[in-house]
Image 1 (cartoon, rainbow, N blue to C red):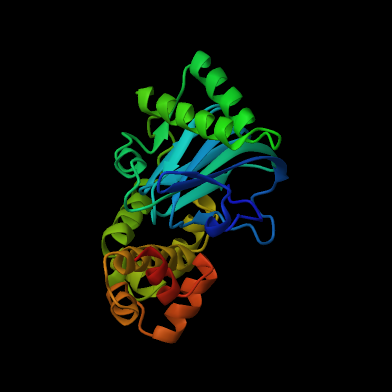
Image 2 (spheres, rainbow, N blue to C red):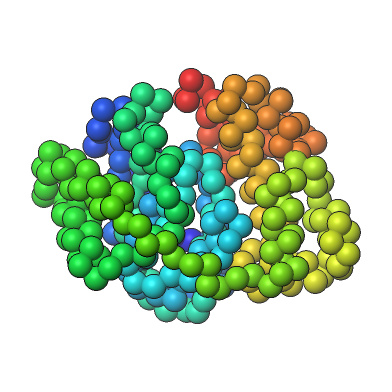
Length: 274
Protein backbone atom coordinates (compact mmCIF):
# COMPACT_ATOMS: atom_id res chain seq x y z
CA UNK A 1 0.00 0.00 0.00
CA UNK A 2 2.54 2.63 -0.39
CA UNK A 3 -0.14 4.36 -2.45
CA UNK A 4 -1.48 7.42 -0.58
CA UNK A 5 -5.19 8.14 -0.43
CA UNK A 6 -4.75 11.08 -2.79
CA UNK A 7 -2.57 10.86 -5.89
CA UNK A 8 -2.34 14.11 -7.84
CA UNK A 9 -3.55 14.05 -11.41
CA UNK A 10 -0.57 13.79 -13.73
CA UNK A 11 -2.16 16.46 -15.90
CA UNK A 12 -1.98 18.84 -12.95
CA UNK A 13 1.58 18.10 -11.86
CA UNK A 14 3.16 21.50 -11.22
CA UNK A 15 6.70 20.48 -12.12
CA UNK A 16 8.02 19.60 -15.55
CA UNK A 17 11.40 18.70 -17.01
CA UNK A 18 11.43 18.66 -20.80
CA UNK A 19 8.73 16.11 -21.66
CA UNK A 20 8.64 14.73 -18.10
CA UNK A 21 6.58 15.65 -15.07
CA UNK A 22 7.07 14.58 -11.48
CA UNK A 23 5.55 14.82 -8.01
CA UNK A 24 6.91 13.95 -4.57
CA UNK A 25 5.09 12.97 -1.37
CA UNK A 26 6.35 12.34 2.16
CA UNK A 27 4.05 10.37 4.44
CA UNK A 28 4.19 8.87 7.92
CA UNK A 29 1.21 7.07 9.40
CA UNK A 30 0.07 3.98 11.28
CA UNK A 31 -0.90 1.09 8.99
CA UNK A 32 -2.33 -2.32 9.85
CA UNK A 33 -2.08 -5.22 7.36
CA UNK A 34 -5.81 -5.94 7.81
CA UNK A 35 -6.85 -2.29 7.50
CA UNK A 36 -10.19 -2.01 5.64
CA UNK A 37 -9.74 -0.60 2.15
CA UNK A 38 -5.99 -1.19 2.11
CA UNK A 39 -4.99 -2.10 -1.45
CA UNK A 40 -1.40 -3.36 -1.57
CA UNK A 41 -1.44 -4.10 -5.33
CA UNK A 42 -0.23 -1.23 -7.50
CA UNK A 43 -0.20 -0.70 -11.25
CA UNK A 44 0.67 2.78 -12.53
CA UNK A 45 0.99 4.29 -15.98
CA UNK A 46 4.05 6.16 -14.75
CA UNK A 47 7.29 5.29 -12.95
CA UNK A 48 7.05 5.10 -9.16
CA UNK A 49 10.05 5.29 -6.83
CA UNK A 50 9.54 4.56 -3.13
CA UNK A 51 12.18 5.39 -0.51
CA UNK A 52 11.46 3.31 2.59
CA UNK A 53 12.15 5.13 5.87
CA UNK A 54 10.39 3.24 8.64
CA UNK A 55 8.24 0.15 9.32
CA UNK A 56 8.58 -3.60 8.75
CA UNK A 57 7.88 -3.95 5.06
CA UNK A 58 8.48 -6.37 2.21
CA UNK A 59 7.89 -5.67 -1.47
CA UNK A 60 7.08 -8.04 -4.30
CA UNK A 61 8.43 -6.76 -7.63
CA UNK A 62 8.66 -8.84 -10.81
CA UNK A 63 7.35 -11.83 -8.87
CA UNK A 64 10.19 -11.76 -6.31
CA UNK A 65 9.90 -10.84 -2.62
CA UNK A 66 12.35 -8.48 -0.89
CA UNK A 67 12.61 -7.39 2.75
CA UNK A 68 13.34 -3.68 3.04
CA UNK A 69 15.43 -1.80 5.55
CA UNK A 70 15.65 1.92 6.15
CA UNK A 71 16.80 3.80 3.06
CA UNK A 72 16.08 1.01 0.57
CA UNK A 73 14.51 2.10 -2.72
CA UNK A 74 11.78 0.34 -4.70
CA UNK A 75 11.62 1.18 -8.41
CA UNK A 76 8.53 0.10 -10.34
CA UNK A 77 8.36 0.87 -14.02
CA UNK A 78 5.27 1.87 -15.96
CA UNK A 79 2.56 -0.84 -15.91
CA UNK A 80 4.63 -3.18 -13.73
CA UNK A 81 2.65 -4.99 -11.05
CA UNK A 82 4.14 -4.54 -7.57
CA UNK A 83 2.82 -5.41 -4.12
CA UNK A 84 3.61 -3.90 -0.72
CA UNK A 85 3.45 -6.50 2.06
CA UNK A 86 3.05 -4.99 5.54
CA UNK A 87 4.30 -7.37 8.20
CA UNK A 88 2.58 -5.97 11.31
CA UNK A 89 0.55 -3.01 12.60
CA UNK A 90 2.93 -0.10 13.18
CA UNK A 91 3.96 3.34 11.95
CA UNK A 92 5.30 3.42 8.40
CA UNK A 93 7.22 6.28 6.80
CA UNK A 94 8.21 6.73 3.16
CA UNK A 95 8.83 9.12 0.32
CA UNK A 96 7.11 8.47 -2.99
CA UNK A 97 8.22 9.98 -6.31
CA UNK A 98 6.00 9.68 -9.39
CA UNK A 99 7.53 10.37 -12.79
CA UNK A 100 5.46 10.75 -15.94
CA UNK A 101 8.02 10.42 -18.72
CA UNK A 102 6.81 11.36 -22.18
CA UNK A 103 7.82 9.72 -25.44
CA UNK A 104 10.48 12.36 -26.13
CA UNK A 105 11.74 12.62 -22.56
CA UNK A 106 15.50 12.32 -21.99
CA UNK A 107 14.62 10.44 -18.80
CA UNK A 108 12.77 7.64 -20.56
CA UNK A 109 15.80 5.47 -21.36
CA UNK A 110 17.35 6.23 -17.98
CA UNK A 111 14.27 5.11 -16.06
CA UNK A 112 13.78 2.01 -18.20
CA UNK A 113 17.38 0.91 -17.70
CA UNK A 114 17.91 1.36 -13.99
CA UNK A 115 19.80 -1.77 -13.06
CA UNK A 116 17.62 -3.20 -10.27
CA UNK A 117 14.07 -2.98 -8.90
CA UNK A 118 15.39 -2.65 -5.33
CA UNK A 119 18.45 -0.60 -4.38
CA UNK A 120 20.26 -0.28 -1.05
CA UNK A 121 22.22 2.87 -0.15
CA UNK A 122 25.22 3.35 2.09
CA UNK A 123 24.80 5.66 5.09
CA UNK A 124 26.38 8.70 3.43
CA UNK A 125 24.26 8.39 0.27
CA UNK A 126 21.14 7.84 2.38
CA UNK A 127 21.76 11.15 4.16
CA UNK A 128 22.25 13.03 0.88
CA UNK A 129 19.11 11.51 -0.62
CA UNK A 130 17.03 12.18 2.50
CA UNK A 131 18.01 15.87 2.46
CA UNK A 132 17.20 16.12 -1.26
CA UNK A 133 13.79 14.56 -0.71
CA UNK A 134 13.00 16.91 2.18
CA UNK A 135 13.97 19.85 -0.02
CA UNK A 136 11.80 18.54 -2.87
CA UNK A 137 8.75 18.35 -0.58
CA UNK A 138 9.30 21.85 0.83
CA UNK A 139 6.22 23.79 -0.27
CA UNK A 140 8.17 27.06 0.01
CA UNK A 141 10.89 25.91 -2.36
CA UNK A 142 11.09 27.29 -5.89
CA UNK A 143 10.30 25.12 -8.92
CA UNK A 144 13.88 25.59 -10.08
CA UNK A 145 15.24 24.28 -6.77
CA UNK A 146 12.86 21.31 -6.82
CA UNK A 147 13.91 20.46 -10.39
CA UNK A 148 17.58 20.70 -9.41
CA UNK A 149 16.99 18.45 -6.38
CA UNK A 150 15.13 15.98 -8.61
CA UNK A 151 18.05 15.73 -11.03
CA UNK A 152 20.50 15.23 -8.15
CA UNK A 153 18.23 12.52 -6.78
CA UNK A 154 18.30 10.69 -10.14
CA UNK A 155 22.07 11.09 -10.31
CA UNK A 156 22.42 9.37 -6.93
CA UNK A 157 20.22 6.54 -8.16
CA UNK A 158 22.41 6.09 -11.22
CA UNK A 159 25.56 5.89 -9.08
CA UNK A 160 24.05 3.35 -6.67
CA UNK A 161 25.23 -0.14 -7.60
CA UNK A 162 24.24 -2.15 -4.52
CA UNK A 163 21.17 -4.26 -5.15
CA UNK A 164 18.99 -5.71 -2.41
CA UNK A 165 19.14 -9.49 -2.40
CA UNK A 166 15.96 -11.53 -2.60
CA UNK A 167 16.09 -12.30 1.11
CA UNK A 168 12.49 -13.10 1.98
CA UNK A 169 11.58 -15.64 -0.69
CA UNK A 170 8.10 -17.04 -1.17
CA UNK A 171 7.62 -20.76 -0.52
CA UNK A 172 8.59 -22.65 -3.68
CA UNK A 173 5.05 -23.81 -4.60
CA UNK A 174 3.74 -20.23 -4.35
CA UNK A 175 6.72 -18.90 -6.31
CA UNK A 176 5.91 -21.34 -9.12
CA UNK A 177 2.31 -20.10 -9.14
CA UNK A 178 3.43 -16.46 -9.27
CA UNK A 179 5.81 -17.25 -12.13
CA UNK A 180 2.97 -18.97 -13.97
CA UNK A 181 0.70 -15.94 -13.55
CA UNK A 182 3.40 -13.54 -14.76
CA UNK A 183 3.98 -15.57 -17.91
CA UNK A 184 0.49 -16.89 -18.64
CA UNK A 185 -2.11 -14.61 -16.98
CA UNK A 186 -4.07 -14.21 -20.22
CA UNK A 187 -4.47 -18.00 -20.52
CA UNK A 188 -5.69 -18.55 -16.94
CA UNK A 189 -9.46 -17.90 -16.90
CA UNK A 190 -10.02 -18.18 -13.14
CA UNK A 191 -8.46 -18.99 -9.78
CA UNK A 192 -10.17 -22.38 -9.97
CA UNK A 193 -8.24 -23.06 -13.18
CA UNK A 194 -5.07 -21.76 -11.52
CA UNK A 195 -5.48 -24.13 -8.57
CA UNK A 196 -6.13 -27.04 -10.95
CA UNK A 197 -2.98 -26.22 -12.96
CA UNK A 198 -0.92 -26.57 -9.77
CA UNK A 199 -2.77 -29.55 -8.25
CA UNK A 200 -3.92 -27.76 -5.11
CA UNK A 201 -7.32 -26.92 -3.65
CA UNK A 202 -8.99 -23.53 -3.97
CA UNK A 203 -8.75 -23.13 -0.19
CA UNK A 204 -4.99 -23.76 -0.17
CA UNK A 205 -4.46 -21.28 -3.00
CA UNK A 206 -6.47 -18.65 -1.13
CA UNK A 207 -4.61 -19.31 2.12
CA UNK A 208 -1.15 -19.00 0.54
CA UNK A 209 -1.94 -15.70 -1.14
CA UNK A 210 -3.52 -14.14 1.93
CA UNK A 211 -0.70 -15.30 4.21
CA UNK A 212 2.22 -14.16 2.05
CA UNK A 213 0.78 -11.31 -0.05
CA UNK A 214 -2.27 -10.24 1.98
CA UNK A 215 -4.45 -10.31 -1.15
CA UNK A 216 -6.77 -12.86 -2.70
CA UNK A 217 -5.57 -14.90 -5.71
CA UNK A 218 -8.50 -13.48 -7.73
CA UNK A 219 -7.39 -9.88 -7.15
CA UNK A 220 -3.78 -10.75 -7.96
CA UNK A 221 -4.63 -12.62 -11.17
CA UNK A 222 -6.98 -9.89 -12.36
CA UNK A 223 -4.38 -7.21 -11.60
CA UNK A 224 -1.81 -9.03 -13.72
CA UNK A 225 -4.33 -9.17 -16.57
CA UNK A 226 -4.96 -5.41 -16.19
CA UNK A 227 -1.22 -4.72 -16.24
CA UNK A 228 -0.95 -6.72 -19.47
CA UNK A 229 -3.92 -4.91 -21.03
CA UNK A 230 -2.38 -1.50 -20.27
CA UNK A 231 0.82 -2.51 -22.05
CA UNK A 232 -1.19 -3.74 -25.05
CA UNK A 233 -3.06 -0.43 -25.24
CA UNK A 234 0.23 1.49 -25.18
CA UNK A 235 1.56 -0.71 -27.98
CA UNK A 236 -1.38 0.24 -30.23
CA UNK A 237 -3.98 -2.45 -29.54
CA UNK A 238 -7.65 -1.51 -29.68
CA UNK A 239 -9.76 -1.73 -26.52
CA UNK A 240 -11.43 -4.93 -27.73
CA UNK A 241 -8.11 -6.47 -28.70
CA UNK A 242 -6.52 -5.55 -25.36
CA UNK A 243 -9.50 -7.04 -23.55
CA UNK A 244 -9.34 -10.38 -25.35
CA UNK A 245 -5.56 -10.71 -25.45
CA UNK A 246 -5.22 -10.05 -21.72
CA UNK A 247 -7.72 -12.78 -20.85
CA UNK A 248 -10.99 -10.96 -20.16
CA UNK A 249 -14.08 -12.56 -21.69
CA UNK A 250 -16.38 -9.55 -21.23
CA UNK A 251 -15.49 -6.10 -22.59
CA UNK A 252 -17.96 -4.33 -20.31
CA UNK A 253 -16.44 -6.01 -17.25
CA UNK A 254 -12.92 -5.26 -18.51
CA UNK A 255 -13.72 -1.55 -19.01
CA UNK A 256 -15.27 -1.35 -15.54
CA UNK A 257 -12.28 -3.00 -13.81
CA UNK A 258 -9.76 -1.01 -15.85
CA UNK A 259 -11.41 2.29 -14.90
CA UNK A 260 -11.53 1.21 -11.26
CA UNK A 261 -7.77 0.53 -11.26
CA UNK A 262 -6.47 3.34 -13.48
CA UNK A 263 -9.09 6.03 -12.97
CA UNK A 264 -9.89 6.24 -16.68
CA UNK A 265 -11.44 4.03 -19.34
CA UNK A 266 -9.14 1.97 -21.59
CA UNK A 267 -9.92 4.31 -24.52
CA UNK A 268 -9.12 7.42 -22.46
CA UNK A 269 -5.91 5.74 -21.31
CA UNK A 270 -4.93 4.82 -24.86
CA UNK A 271 -5.71 8.29 -26.30
CA UNK A 272 -3.78 10.10 -23.57
CA UNK A 273 -0.61 8.26 -24.48
CA UNK A 274 -0.86 8.67 -28.26
